[in-house]
Length: 239
Image (tube, rainbow, N blue to C red; front, side):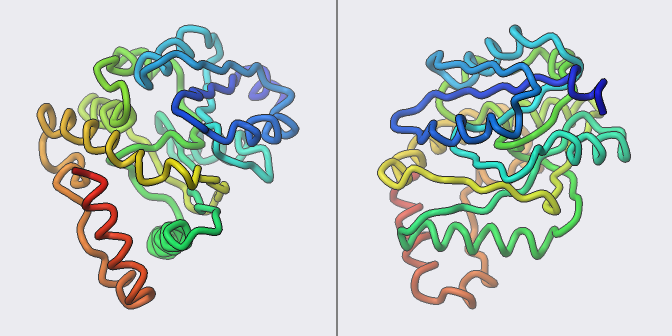
């Protein structure tokens, strides 16, 4: 365990506007034994590359600034990484917030956890709370700086898959995702830009999200009123 603690660094690309960075401070009580790097460089691809260049440990923990931890995630993520010998392992998340649309997002998270309660192979973004082998990220050339708003994580996972590397999603490990309620729908405009960039360069099978998020009929049964309204707002926000 001591080797693992000495060989991992925490990387937090802040970015954005109005991100509740208070969660970063609360996370530090769990991660005080690790070297911590934070970036406020504009452009998520550039920010992640800057952090990657600062790190020198074999393992890096990517931690978004609006994630709250109730435990040190590194030992559990590292255990899964060792068991399956993969390049990265991402924790599951549960959206937290009082607004109705955040309650819908939380229910969508719960459905995802129910469907994939164990471990699954990732074909999309997996960086909100994730442990990666730094060497493998460097092997594929790091992050593409062209992705300045969103999509940089999808692109990295796609390129890792293309080179025979695997990233796993472990929904047995759950972190709280405190979304900024004031900027929640605004972020979808950034997603639209990122998805458009991805769609221009990738094969369809790697990222179905670029084709537009489909209606989930299980969610429709759970929230027959709020879920359709959420999808409608999402559609207009992605324009």
